[in-house]
Image 1 (cartoon, helix red, strand yellow):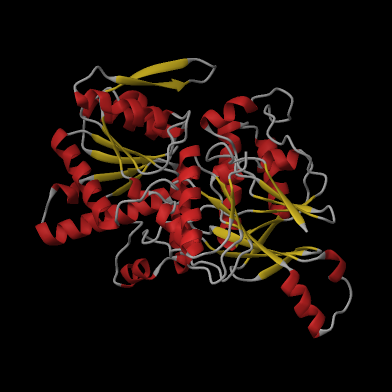
Image 2: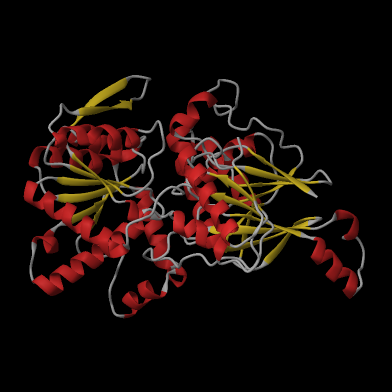
Length: 494
């Protein structure tokens, strides 16, 4: 009836791109993400129009692209896909369709070209092919296939996608009611999880499991661990920042522009409000929270405008007169000149401040400039709140940074520079990881996504995770099915 091939997210957590092909020959892509970190090393090439060989599979039978959400590891290869000749519809939730052009424009500027003509051409094509769809509404994608987007709770607009595959020889012409029921009974429901959100995350509602599934393709970013509870992670975040106030240094928080930045602002606003209410006038009340990312600032505006997609808790705060994403302590940095002056000022002054900037894995962006200047300073603290892929500077800082605090010689990280040079930077800053702030579901969330279905899938493919995470999640799924005396085929594609 159908087959599935994976063009990314099988040897790590980036490059998500999956192809479902019907027996009729037509196919769809679910996501078309960019490879990052170590996963991108073997994809360097001189033979594509953008200087990299990113679309290395046949797209002649691809009829449509379905986008789960607009993080770069799920959409970053779209410009290459368009350059390769794809001209079919690109389906996305309404919020994702609104955010996607800005994500693609920024990705082209950072990783491909600042040529305005190239950028305009790509965006014109993208907007022409974008099809915004409502959550929970079925879309006829092509003969024999329909799709439905369901809330995933990962970032604004994120979705998991249900696909119903129908036997082709029975879908043509008018059908009697009994015949239609027979066709539905023979159909297969395939679900692509995209990235599932963590329960009890701020701002967005948690994903609800589907009613049924025959085959599930599920992410496994945190398939081998459990997140901290929200109260504990807020307590740890508050403690780290207060240590910074004592050290008179800067807290650097690498964060993706979409999702993580807005959740952090929400939590920081609440800490400031609660501390001020309980303890009176404190240093928290005068602490600067700096968002140094024009892209993140624009997406924060989108989050504010689309607050009808927020969860009940966040909407109650707005109704009470609070402004979770726009509060008195919040400062934004837009121009490159302002950014450069701020980096130097914080380096020279040691003024206590929280700086949130991209990239979330420290591989470029304005955060890299802060790290290069402030990592050697013992007054600095770096707080990781998201997954750091292998081969990224963020992973190296996590791994080698704590040496200095353990009384050993400082570790170091190497940053790539423009022109191909590299800079080695010692790490004397304090390094912290708060896994509870991840926008990804942990192992319990991934298991519950299956457990709470009325009809469990008979086939599960585990993707988008490191090998240990995938193997541990597989073991947990097998145990779950065994405990309930059910059969399942769990695969880890290679």
